Length: 89
Image (cartoon, rainbow, N blue to C red; front, side):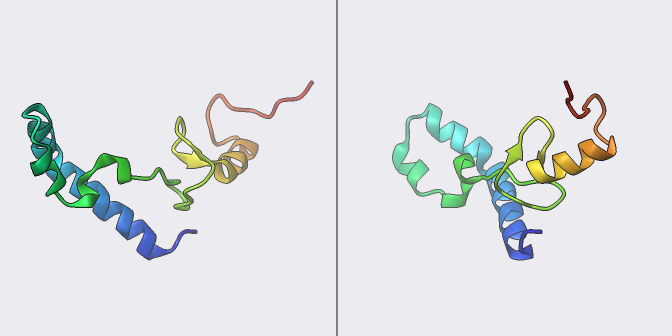
């Protein structure tokens, strides 16, 4: 499980990105790069990081499922992910 502070920081970044999305788009269309540079750093969507929805783990994230590989494996073994089963040949 990720530290609570890291999860909260990520949530704060997501809110900041949403708050400044329209303003960033307007500044980009106007090609006002000076104005863009004055926005907060965390308002940039590139600073967001994908995290597992169950554990908050940042590495081994599977975008299609929204969880990390460890949780994917556990859920797949238990048959809790529809359409996924263990391969055998």
